Image (tube, rainbow, N blue to C red; front, side, top):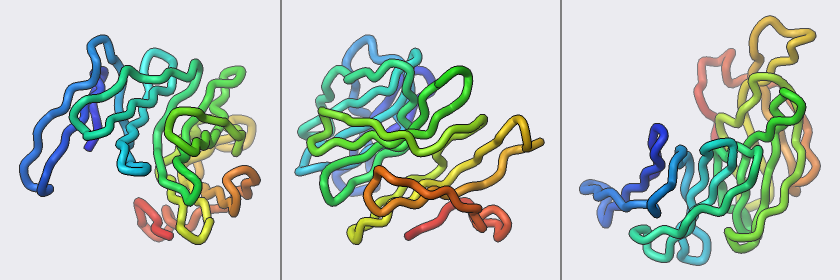
Amino acid sequence: AVGGAGSAMVWHSPDGRTWSRAYLPDGTSGNALSVETIDGEFVAVGEGLGHGLVWSSADGLEWSAPTRVKGARFERLAATPDGLAIAGTKDVKGMNQLNVWTSPNGTDWTGTKVDRGFLLHPSQFEVTDTGTWLITGPLMDPAKDRRPKDRSWLSTDGETWERRKSPAHKLGWDQSTI
């Protein structure tokens, strides 16, 4: 489990009932927002001080100093058939640009633009074993919208994305599962 409010935190449990805090390296400020495993290694992502942050751990107890990506906010992490992917945003001329970063190993990351808007952030990010990628979240175009609208973005490869209206909010759902 991950979290934090200005000080990134990680917890671990052998049974899901009792939890202990694992400490990230000294000087780690920010928020850890999502965690996954790849090939038995733990990877956590988050944001802090204007950077997207990626930590890794072989055992969930001892964590690396974070890899930093300037100007990014890493919010959601998902396992993919080819490694890991992060959904997050970058500030581009005062607008949030929704991006997906992919990695075969949890260390080397490549970013792809998904969409651009205001008050845009990924609420949920899923990748299925069959290759369907889904991001949900609010999007607001300040030239047209008075308030954010729920949207979904779909992809079959993580590189080409299609924006769709999301029915989840109208139905009272907080999340979707694919």
